Image (cartoon, rainbow, N blue to C red; front, side, top):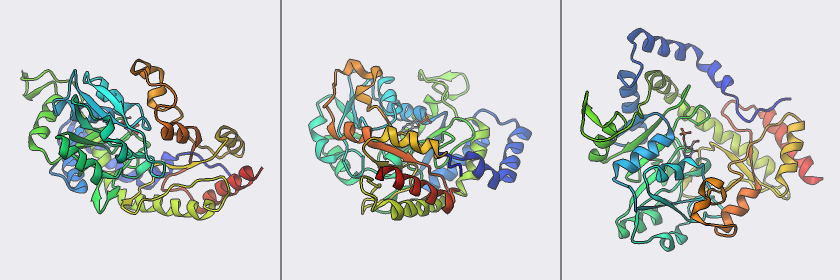
Length: 368
Ligand SMILES: Cc1ncc(COP(=O)(O)O)c(C=O)c1O
């Protein structure tokens, strides 16, 4: 039995008709760059997240960049985030001219450890970016408390956490801005590149709308030096169709995660993910931790079970961030978990038989 890491085709088959109709409408109206389909999705996504607005952009990386620029972050500033994330979180900080400063993660949730946050804050710090890794939100209350005390912005990197909750509040709606990626493999994935920033800050909303469109509010009247970070119309239409299904897909992911939990919890040497008491986890990624993970991944691949690693190298140890001068041992929790993570196949359409097959394979291999 083949178990792919992700099966986008299986999901597409369930919505083929709706998607075809939606794309045809965009073609009929030639609303390709920005336009009514993006505006419609923005309205629906803001309502879903419980925010005043959503600004559609070209990718999750654009979302982070536009949010930071919109809040006025620039050269000489520092922005605190985690080293246990995808590089885009730090890239957006760097492309504002600011410096990323890292805080280690909690060993249970793999998210920003609030007890280590204050030590990373300096007079140059302007913002904090907690990342809701794998689909579980960071512990936001203590982070917000520190941010308020120090007058810092909080930008949530919710790229992996569409519909996730913290004490009943949705990802993206808690900080000054919430940034989402709609990369095709995400829980809410476009059929191309796309992203969005949600916010309750009217001024920020206005500024980001200009920044994403060459700094103009009126055509050819450029009042800011902006960029082209617009969402395209086809992505807006596709995302409107898929948003209607998101909650059902999330429930399917949660059910799949529960099945994995039950089958793997008592396997010696396997650490299953933990859902924090404050959280609704949406399992974008179901990451277990094991020793000797490279051997395990190779052996599973031989059985046609395909896993991923998110992420093998912490940001501070990447060549791209060598100039920060942070060597091995700087963030021990991040470094340990990064060497042990294995992302098991996870998508809503995964079958019980596939989950059992993965669990049996793992059970046998870990016991060797
Ligand atoms: C945590 C995180 N931040 C940012 C991004 C960047 O999103 P995109 O690939 O849409 O630019 C991603 C997606 O890969 C991500 O997982």
